[in-house]
Length: 186
Figure 1 (tube, rainbow, N blue to C red):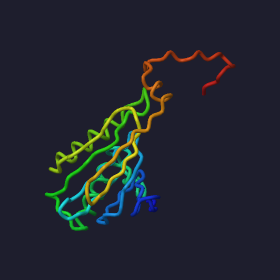
Figure 2: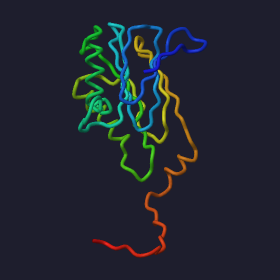
Figure 3: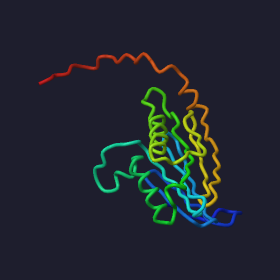
Figure 4: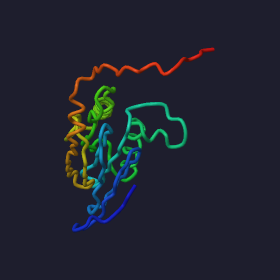
């Protein structure tokens, strides 16, 4: 987590990276992140004036090793919700905004769509309303979220070369490799 002052603005900016989450009840705090296929869930209790953001890489998986689970959506969601409840939020008042889940690379499985579908299903199953979202697409996003008010801003990050590459047909003929010698198999 990176905490710094925002030039020209009162308050603090806290940058949330993959596998992290942060909550705050400070009206001067803005949470930020940059997303591609990852998803960030911004959640708050408007009455308690507390909110937070997580940033996860994959929907689910097996966690091997210390803190490995932080990169998975199921774990990231539980951490965020539990910390909000510990800070005075009530589950029945929580609301969420979702960002990310872009298709960043052509020809590979669409991890972004899986992340987005996971987040939507998780929140639906938990009965937490989604009051705003920007999911999918082909562009990375820069997100700013004010946890006490629920205000969110998004700016897409576009790279024309990458977007052109993503729009090319996926099926490509592999280049021929010339015979450079013999191989002996045992």
